[in-house]
Image 1 (spheres, rainbow, N blue to C red):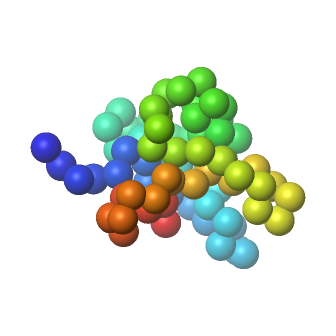
Image 2: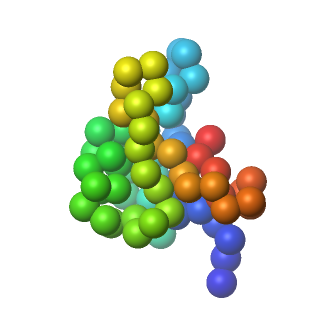
Image 3: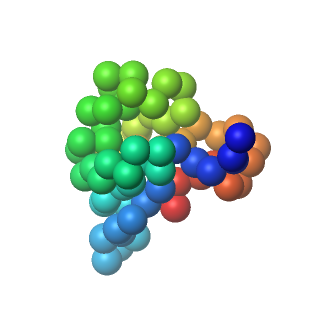
Length: 72
């Protein structure tokens, strides 16, 4: 079993906001909004959630003490 995160960031904006993501198990690519909808549907269990950062819904990984599991 691997400790690879389920989702990785593949594109950031010029300001550093995570904008595009890839599911490392399926290869599916998602926009920020698509990923938020998938989180809300429960597609990623309890591993991710979203919060408002500077007024914009932003996906974040739930902290578990392992820096390898963070979005970034």
